[in-house]
Length: 325
Ligand SMILES: *Cc1c(COP(=O)(O)O)cnc(C)c1O
Image (tube, rainbow, N blue to C red; front, side, top):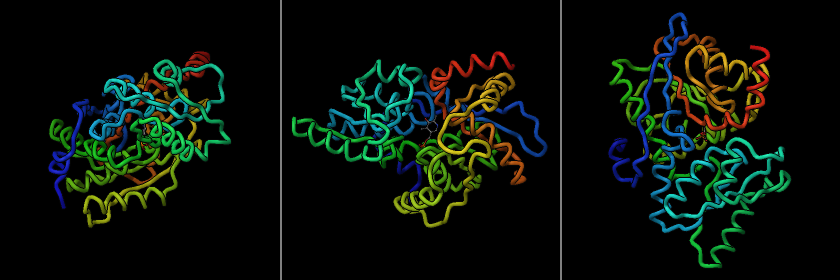
């Protein structure tokens, strides 16, 4: 089995930030000490764990001399916004291919995607065919002499997986800095790529923490199958141990609403940490409940995967909460 450091030393990487701090959370809880890893501090538009994926994805595109990248995603995608800017920095043209939003007025990430690039929108009924639409567009552009790459939702690609492996190494660095080890690690999952890389990165490092993945919109069987594929690629023979759990409140890949939104505000007031209504806000609300059900003990780490610019798309909900707080 290859060492993680050795593997990463063979892959071209940009020098984007890859160290985020960990601090305790002021949440008293019998038998459990809660900590949070501040991936949200890794930048603004490119803030959060995704910058890890891009650190290896961008060099792969540059090395392949790609000049146009078709970016598939939702109208509010963190991946599309952050990647658009990093591509432009390299002189690569981003071409976002997005799912049309319900609202007429652009706000939040969508506003900044539209200000930064010229997205193409697909209607909801066309969305299931997005991949073939992207292929057709790619063929057309290649006919015009362009070198094109399609970036799937969440940058779910091998080229991004390597960068995502840096999270496990950075957690081990945090443990050295803090002089403690984590018994449990919580992370949220959209496509699941970052969580899969964390689980396997820890495996390569022989780390004993049990990772619990809050699965927001993937099928758990698909998550397990994909994990097996990466595991084989890395030559890991042990079956990794991890938990998959689901939101107790609202199911599905939707932002939080109503009372859960107030929880985001209460959490920020109590801990000084803002979370977003799609990922981290859900994770900090669900993790303590899950830890209790599973009777977890010891040092627990929540990975705040970032994505705070999404909050600017929810100013109405935030403003309404004034009335209730
Ligand atoms: C994309 C994203 C995730 C999910 O990452 P996956 O690798 O797709 O599971 C989690 N949090 C934030 C803030 C994100 O932008």
